Structure formats: structure tokens, C-alpha cells
Amino acid sequence: MFVRLSAAIAAVSLLGSPAFAQGAAKPTDPQIAHIAYTAGVIDITAAKQAMAKATNKDVKAFAADMLRDHEAVNKQALDLVKKLKVTPEDNDTSKALTKQAADKHAELEKLKGAEFDKAYAANEVAYHKAVNGALETLLIPNASNAELKSLLQTGLKIFQGHQQHAEHVAAALK
Amino acid sequence: MKLGWILPIAASLMAGMSVPAAAATLQITMDNLVISPAEASAKVGDTIEWINNDVFVHSATARNGDWDINMPAKKTVTSILKKAGTIEYYCRFHPNMKAKLTVAP
Image (cartoon, rainbow over all chains, first blue to last red; front, top):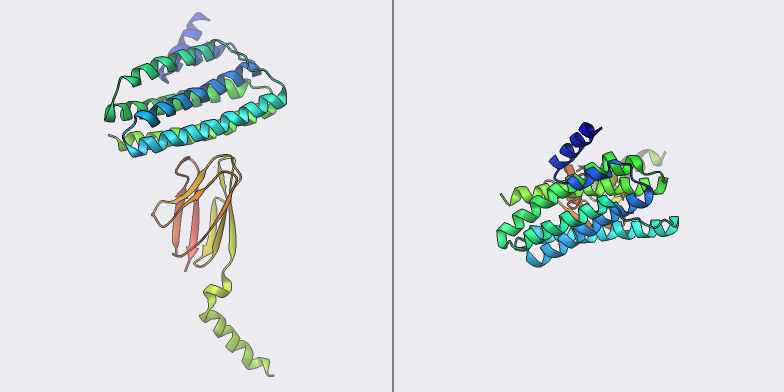
């Protein structure tokens, strides 16, 4: 068991986000809703930082796209939990995600100009990849409510789009 | 008897003015991050009604640069096809949304 868990942590760490490994204990719907919402809030915060600090116009535009899309997804998520009368429940995965994001935010805050642009774009690729991995392997399979599952599936499609978009932006900066 | 010569004239007139006479409207929908139909055919002069059912902004961006249509969330926009060709297009914001439009002259 210990070996399998370690292997899982190692695998997820490769994706750049060890936070999700802690969710291996089958999250409940209220926890899944919290994790998904938190993941959106993190990218919104990162986008606001980039809109203030980025110098490259494609990076700025990308950040504005992230802000707009993630706010739209999170609004749908809030509407859904209200409708389902589910109270999102904080959990270790959400906490670890928030902590990691705060560290990354502080790290990016120290950078300027092209350095910031590159680091933000690279992190957006890694972050979306990690969230997509978690959606596919952890959140979607464990969601029991059909509407929640469906919203997560829409989220996966949109985040996969963001990942490709981020890859284009990051590649153009090299 | 009279129709015998009117019809060929009418037909040849129509052939000469085929663009305005045959202009059609085609609907292409973006729904839940999917473009449908994924492959469509139209003619120069036709109108495309781009219907965005999502709460996200989408675009229909031609890879060859012929056009770049912006679609606000939950809105429909129209454009008229001006150039023939087989055009692959995608959404700039979600490049995993891809489709093809064949425009005949």
C-alpha cells in the first residue's frame, strides 16, 4: 500500500502538482466541488497577477482569457452547488493546492518583464496539465452526481483548450 | 410550346447570376466546446450564422488567415463568405475546438 501510494505521488509529482496525490482517498462530491472551484480561483489569481505584470501582449491577452473563462466556469459551479444544495467542503487537496499556488505566486512576484512572461506561461502549461490529469483520473471518476460530473467534463474540455493555448503562447516566447 | 424556349433562357440567366440567386444561410454551432457540423460545405456569397451556445467566448479563426470571427458568449454572429477554398479553422481561445469549411466558388 505504501509503495503504491508513493508511486502515485511520484507519478503526480511529475505532472508538477503533488497536491492532487493526497486526493487518492476518493474524494466526495462536496470535496470534489471544493477542489474544482479552488483550482479555478487559483488560475484567476494567477491571471490577475499576469495582467498587472506581463509585458508581452500575447501573454497579457492569454491572462485576460483565463480570467474570463475561469470566472465563467466557477459561476456555473456555484450555480450548480446551490441548485444541488451541496456545501463545498474544504479538504487536504484544496489546502495543498492553495499553498502551492501561494508559493508560486510569491516566486513569480519577484520576476520582471520577459522573465515573468516566460515563467507565467510555463506555469500555466504545467498547472493546466496537472488539473487536467486530476480531472481525468481523480475528480471525474469519483463524482457521483451526474450534473457535477457533466460540469467537470466541460471543465476538462475547456482546460485542455487552455493547456494548448498556453503551449502556443509559451512556445512563441522562446 | 412557349415554355420550350423560355426555360433554357431562364436557366442560362440563372447560371450567369448564380451567386446572388443561390446564396444560402448555413448554421454552425459551438456547444459545450464542440463545433458542429465538424465539416461543412458552402459557396461564396453564402452567409454563416455562427451560434455560440456556451457561456465562454469563442472564435472561428481560419488557419489561412481568411477570416477571424469573434463570438461573444451566448450570442450569434453572421459573416458572408467572400473567398473560395477549403478552410480549416479553430477557436483561438480553445485550440482543441477544430472544424473545416469547404467554400465552393
